[in-house]
Image (cartoon, rainbow, N blue to C red; front, side):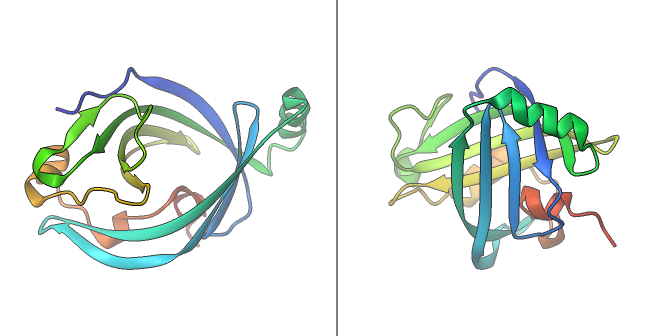
Length: 171
């Protein structure tokens, strides 16, 4: 029911660091590094939806010669993991009792980006839903708002993880 932006499709290339708390990827001419600084809490969004509230920092560097990194990726396929993403995004902002929903984050200084994605990695298809809060005064979602987005499909703490942790192969 969210007014998602039009479907975006892309392939990101993740450098195999084999670490759950830091990820590095090549995306659209940039190298991006995202580090998990810690977990605020393990929390209950609703009785059916549990998740980890994590704090991240992100660095992004535009490359002067993006094609050079694509050559490196092609020459080192064991080091870079292609992750195909089909995603839709909506932005929630304002106060919980008057929450606005926008298809674009332009001009929004605090809110929650909701991302629904279909991810193809290592020959398997996965589905993800992410809530990325940003800004100094982001809105807390009510139980009814979370239920409207997620439905009653049960999600556990084991289902909750960032991309870096998700991509580390199970041992």
